[in-house]
Length: 66
Length: 256
Image (cartoon, rainbow over all chains, first blue to last red; front, side):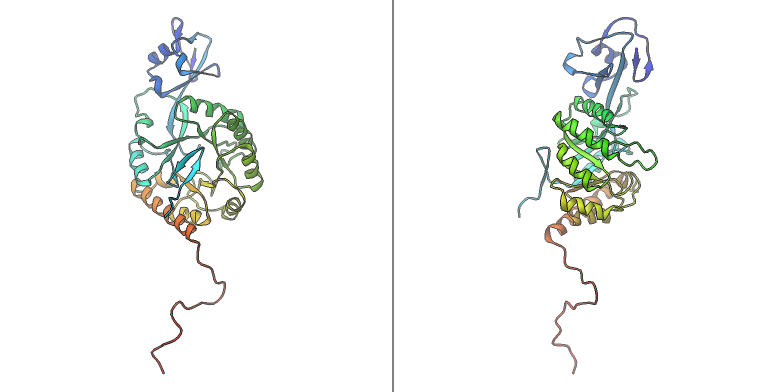
């Protein structure tokens, strides 16, 4: 699957929660998009990701503009 | 004296200094916010990295309202996508719409900004659009449901000062929403001037982040903004176009 623009191999079906854990992210600090749809935080345990998915994981960064 | 506050998205603010959080070492952000007396700080939304670098959220003092921006968006659709993600990050419903197509001057795309403002306001966001100061567009933003208008003083990050003064003044006079001057303000004196004109607030980032001493410059801006505001509230003294006028009595001189 593609995570933040990088192709990654994960062996089996994973929940969003498991994926975040494997990728080293804290649930409370990120927002997740699965194939351009936002995944609600309270569904991270149930929503599964598969090999053909495109996942975006975002967080806040310092920024004024641009 | 009555407390001098202003409201955005139903929230009351005492500080009229909105601080940007870009270009800093994260560890300096807390000191900058404290010295600035800022109650609102802007943030960007980007792809997360898990390389262990300090998360900015650990360095923003409690009680400060976050104003996520849509920087990186090139059209209304991208801005809406970023805004929705920012809301999902769970820090409120404020968003600063910022849409740029031009990568040299980084000027905002006013038309796309109006579109994004309308879509996001309908979704319940408190929208603060960053714009090129144009009265007609500002009126469109009011109708689109913006909660403030953020005209630029000069290109972002330029520290060039109040290049659009006359047009910002028109917005202040004609638009019935807080006018928050954003981008290009490089010195405390310029921030002060903006406030003297009657702006509701000033936003600055590069001026602080590129200063020699960041906390000290944040403090200098705070004082300048407060001084400008006070001057505006008190009403500036009149300008005499020609000649002088004595302030001292014109009688009782020690002569004759």
